[in-house]
Image (cartoon, rainbow, N blue to C red; front, side, top):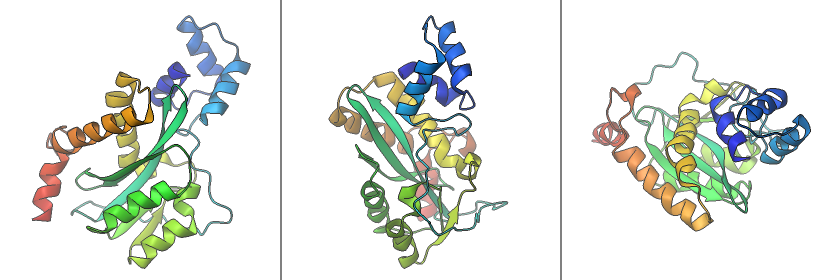
Length: 231
């Protein structure tokens, strides 16, 4: 499952048969039925570049995608959020993060052992205490399309933008963040407990915001953009 998770992050277009073939190149003699069972257990599906965490809520309200062709010019112009999974020996935990598109600064994050909307709301409400964006982009996940989450945004006077179905690039900056967290932190550490995961993720996000140089920011740190923009 670890091999599948790592390879899936690299090649999200690998389906059951291609993943089976790749595992055999790693001397894992598995058949496609076992790979299918494991991928289903992990909640991942080919094409979509993350676990299948984006199932919509029952009869959710739909919002337009407002970011096509948008030029980023300022802090708090666009925020977005996403969920990714982290495997532990006992199962999975889920990480949600909120990011500012202009500075790439991670504004808030939260970990949960369930996919309940409450941990996403906690991350959102915490960051709304110190600021708010003009536009908040969500994907089609039940947590973000829930009445509780969208009502919180609307009550704050924030325009909601929503990804198109199966269009992962609509939320590209937070998708890249989730990828970086896995490659630069999670896969290197192999967390054994939830407490260890939280402590290490906290240290990583401190590094990500304050020390990590971003090519897309002309090799500046998020805090150097976020801090200057706030002043």
